[in-house]
Image (cartoon, rainbow, N blue to C red; front, side):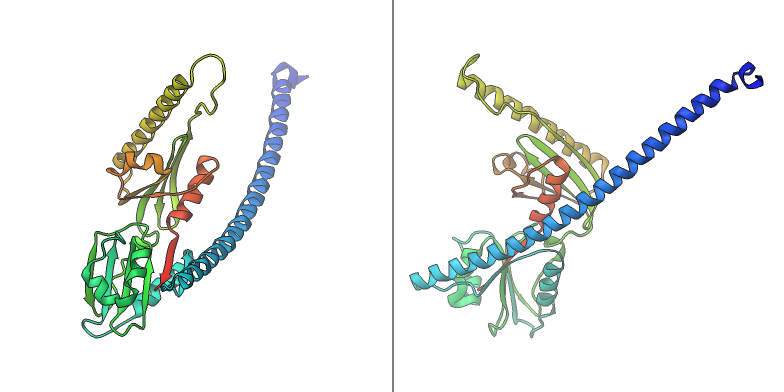
Length: 302
């Protein structure tokens, strides 16, 4: 009776309702955590399968190249491999461990295989053609011909050639180090991550709905294409604005832009490096795929 007079009964009933709602939300949260854990496990298993498939593809590509070269009487690469994560670090460690006399280790960044520098031809001799086929690449060899490799470089340096006591390998150009931003741009999607090494510390993303099919009625194919092009232009304007905001608000030492080859030209002036990648899915998943593909290094042994 006293509770009713003071209005406590209604409050107690409301508290019970809220407590029951809280328990329901906690159950939902726990279910969501379990779902995310299962999804993470599934994604990890899928990535492992992709790794195995990519390794197998690289092996088969090497076999195809070797058989083709043998049929044509040409030299072939002794080995080809895609390097990621620990394996990439292991190979870079080996290259850095090579020590020679004062002028025994040769390093060059070759951006164009059709215009090999004379010093590259002299250093590699009859294997120089393979360096041209691997370009753009960082090419290393020693004066005894015991150690040779061509590696793709995610963040390419300016072209150079040099002899020294050790190979000139800048690790930060091959693997994620320090603070940098990686943006994925497609004609219908944008995703941006800021990273400390391999760890993503910030993310933003959005997608844009594009007209994907021209109906037979309503308007002409030419008008449909104009409307679609305008949608893409608007989307790219949003992407540029997002990148400008990152430059102002976040102190990222490097900016990499990857995505569809058809739109990358729009960002070459603002990016430290660009690369075409095949990344699909929602913005966050696509960015994870793009990050992995961008930092994959292709090794060829001439």
